[in-house]
Each structure stands twice: as C-alpha cells, then as structure tokens.
Length: 270
Image 1 (spheres, rainbow, N blue to C red):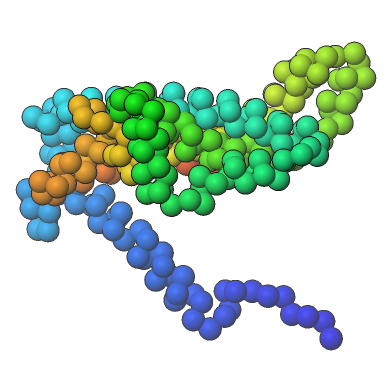
Image 2 (tube, rainbow, N blue to C red):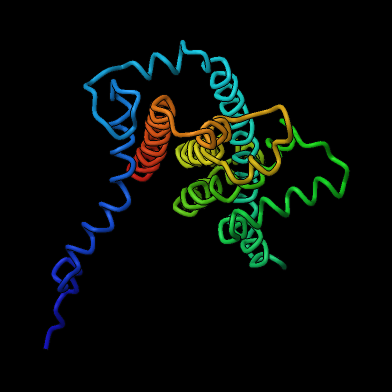
C-alpha cells in the first residue's frame, strides 16, 4: 500500500495555529509602524496621518543624540561584520577544505556555540572577561564583542556556499600548475562571493540590532541606536520612538532580504 504524502497544511488545527503564531509575531510590529504616522502625541489615540514624528527624529531636539547613536551603530556593525566575515571565511575554508583533522568536530562546536548560548550569558561573560583583564569598556569593547558574536552568523551562509562548490575546480587549477593560494584566490573565492556577501549582510544586521551584549559592554558615554531607544523608552514611550523603531525595522528587513536574495542568486549560479 503506497504511503500517503505527509502534508502539514491538512492537519486538524494546523492552519489556525499558524495564523495565530503569525499574528502574535507581526501584529506588534504593524501597530508600531502604523502609529509612527499618527499625528497625535498620544500613542493610543489616532489623530490622522502625518510625518510629524519622522521630522522630529531628524530635526527635533533629540535628533543629535539619535544621529550620534545611529552613526555608532553603523560604524560598529560595519567593522564587526567585516572582521567576522573574514574570520568566518577562514574558518569555513579550514573546516571544509582541509579534510579530516584532529579536533575538527570540536571546532564546529566552538564556532556554533555563540548561537546556542543564551545572549545574556554571553553578555555577562564578556563583561566579566573585560573587567578581569582590566580593559576599559567603550567603543572598542563593543566592536570586539560584536565581532565574536557575529562570527557564527557569518559562518553559516559561507560554509553552506563552500559545501556546494565541488573541489574539482580547485583540483583543475592545481593541475594547471596554479599554487594553492592562487587556486583559492582566483577560483574558489569568486565562487564563494555570494555566500561571503550574504554572511556579511547577516552579520551586519545582527550587530546593528543587538541590544543585550551592547548594553553590558558599552560603558558610559557611548550609545548605539538600540541602547538609545531603550534609554528613551525608560522615560516613557514617545511617538518619535515608534518612528525610529520603524526605520530600524525597515533597514533590518532590507538587509535580511538582500542576504536571502544573494544566497538564492549564488545557488542558481552553481
């Protein structure tokens, strides 16, 4: 008797459960986006469509604070994502192209461990480490912490891309008297480019959106956009915070979408 194809869509209660999960996940985001265009100063009463609070974000009295925080977030994310991508590319090359070696499985565990460990634990451990070595918290500690935390996120698409590339390309280059470095630089690296770029985008947005680790290691006198938003929310939720949150959400969606599309492009070009 032929087995019937398993289709979760037809399981009793699966469809309403799916819609419920989607509603709980995205309804708060939609509410924030809608009320960021509210003309009223109240966050609960609708006063008509307006770009008032977006103007407040860029030209209001708190604009310099948020602009500085945004600049810090962007530069930290750019540096951390670049370093994390470079390290992840090297790690993927060693893990996938170096063959079996002692400690390979343990290396996989170490690379993926930051994803599995609760972020609050990582934040506390990082702060304790910096305190133990006498390292003053500030801009540099955020960059270091973000770089370490972003490595596994950059590694995943890079490793997936490298695993999909047959090593016969490199063997052909070596047969044509290319050095190992030349084969990597001129053959493997261009083929890996979509995965590397996708990993960079993913690491960038993870760093840009991070709050917990940043809040622990930032020290006094420096703010990123998430920590600046949190500081303002502690004094009460203002409509301009909804506008900033919407802008940050749009940036996050754009980068995640780009990462996905680049990864798909790389798969089609194999």
